[in-house]
Image (cartoon, rainbow, N blue to C red; front, side, top):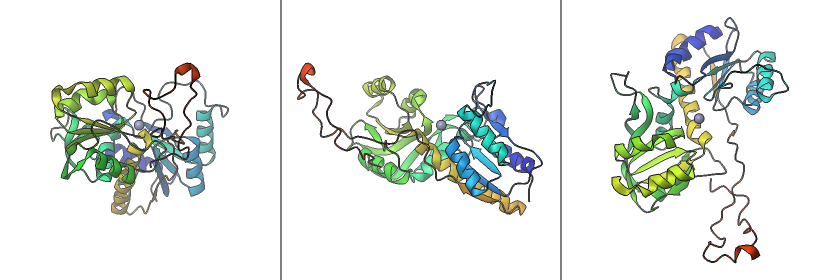
Length: 305
Ligand SMILES: [Zn+2]
């Protein structure tokens, strides 16, 4: 049975802390190095729901993608929600370890897992890490589809293969355009638009796209028609938990550790419902503003998946 320090050393070899962005906060947040580890849970978010899941499982270690504390703090009082997380972890002898931007750029990393979930063939990183002589590490991935799909079909595949969220998949651009190459980036991707244009792909699948960057990206036709597919942030990063769990499982087998490695089933996407507005009035047919009321949501149960 390995000690926490031994398991952490393995996690550090997969996702070295020095490969994280300078603003990031990765590594071990809570943990007693000599404690023995049997059960490990991987999750995207270090929130009370996933910590409670770790408690129910009897986990000794929770590994999350997002940091608990990204900036400094002066309190872990249980009256704060992050302090409550820390208290729950310590009271239940559960360690917390974070692999964030060091897992984004890893080989394999967060966007490899996203590409794998969608059956996309990874060609290269979207933004290669200049310190990797093999050119395999870096942010995002440029992928090929062995059988081209329309944007609509690719969005349907993403909605089907990624864990279900209220948002589902939003599309910008011609839904019937054919996609042969697509860039993917798990998590917030609108800072990567210049790289996506330079990659010359047919589409970009990511999360957290905002009005102005998306609108300006779509208006710039100099690089040919491009489609945007916007998924829920949590859903684009969750496949990494399965990939990471498989990586740790394999290492555990090699060491004869017999770790029990789990992937969180808790949906921690903050959005809980979606009201489709396709049947509502368009601005051209809507009654004058003074007389109008907000169109009734046509479907509050939401979720085109
Ligand atoms: Zn993220």
